[in-house]
Image (cartoon, rainbow, N blue to C red; front, side, top):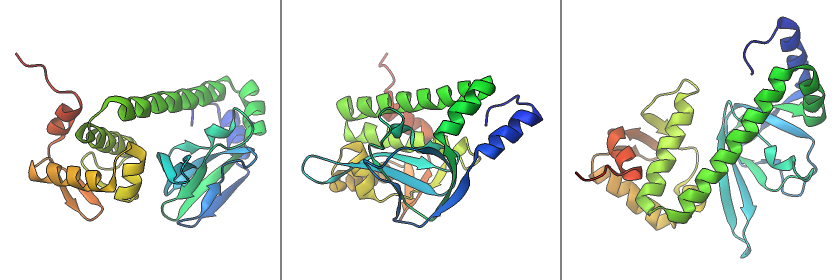
Length: 220
């Protein structure tokens, strides 16, 4: 929610939420090709977005969590370009896009906020392209863990502990790595004392070592 709004503007934005929808784990919020009508603010739960690759396999394109907005992919052509699947039971606020556009003309702070959200998505997409284009497996997984814990911490969660809502296979799909490579890299991080892993629970023991993997310090 944009900061510095008047009580009247807050009421207008509150009225913009058409409904709340509960999404069961494993079901889709929207599908590739479906007509775009709304953006969705995730209240609780975790989602993944995916597209079908040329050989018919699912390619994970992102993970979204509570506090984030999903559905921006549909703005360009009025149709969604991916599937959004709940990784656990979730609830979203449905915000009709025509109403957002209408309100943005009345509330300048809302328009700026929507632009910020869209800009953040562009930056994230660019980051993923860099990730898949030039990084080794260790760098990809380290970047993924650091990004995930940073986003969770911004929402009031721990700075060093997280529960992975996605499978290692889904992580591999997102990072462009085979399942075996993801598992092997996790094991290497454990052996080197960087993280502790118990099933899907991950505790980052040494954040600096994780950061050094992504940005190695220059040798003197």
